[in-house]
View 1: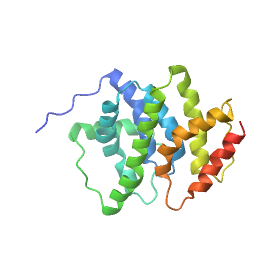
View 2 (view 1 turned 135 degrees about the horizontal axis):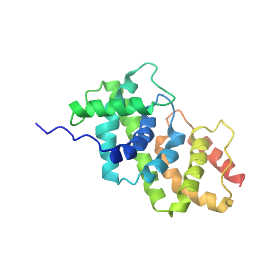
View 3 (view 1 turned 180 degrees about the vertical axis):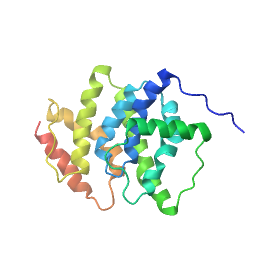
View 4 (view 1 turned 60 degrees about the horizontal axis):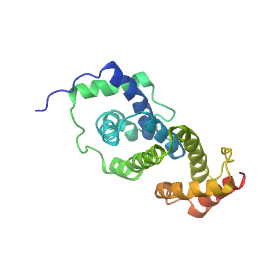
Length: 204
């Protein structure tokens, strides 16, 4: 039987709390797709590599918050940081790895179609941010957030973008759109979503 995990050090906890909060948003009972660029920025700023983030996702956050997918009306606003930490630390002390997986067929579909793809998209966006100079990451994440919001919520008024030319924003969107497109639901209109982003760009 594997040995129990060692307790987190204060330094590990300081980093993990921010990552737990960011990844925890993906388990909220609400549409978090527009927030993926902001989540990606927090992951990029954590200083952790892809393997470390993957371990936190699969072995810490997912076992602690998977329950929210099974509730008729789950938590939709946010998970309290103290609650999240206590739940992760407690479960980590008694369970070494997430079993794959004791989910109902319905929850397995929710996981594979919504939650895991959102995590994968956030990690792709993180990689894109890490390719930029440090000073540009926050602004790029904000632009991506505005575009994602227009794309997934085209019925809402657009958020203002940062000062940039329409040509620059068009290039940014061309890079972003392939990551967001697979997250559109079958009930959502691809053309309408794309037009909402183009309308946002036209305001530049």
